[in-house]
Length: 70
Image (cartoon, rainbow, N blue to C red):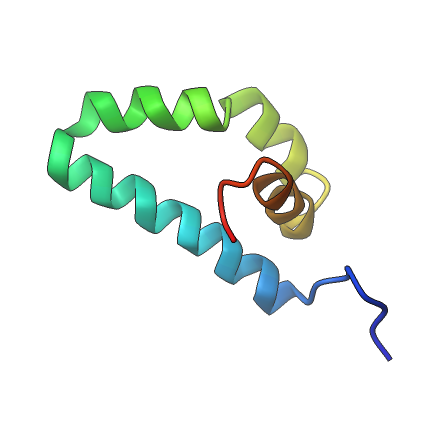
């Protein structure tokens, strides 16, 4: 039985995909540069790399904690 607060890999992937969809929308609406700047501000590349080295759920947890996905 899963304890409250733990997430499956599929749930983690969905959260990451939600974040990527928002960035894609901004890229389409505003262009590559504004989307890249916003992404870096919301999720610095160094933080993303560090979290992904611990697994997708680490990144998903970060996105949830920062309220970047719901």
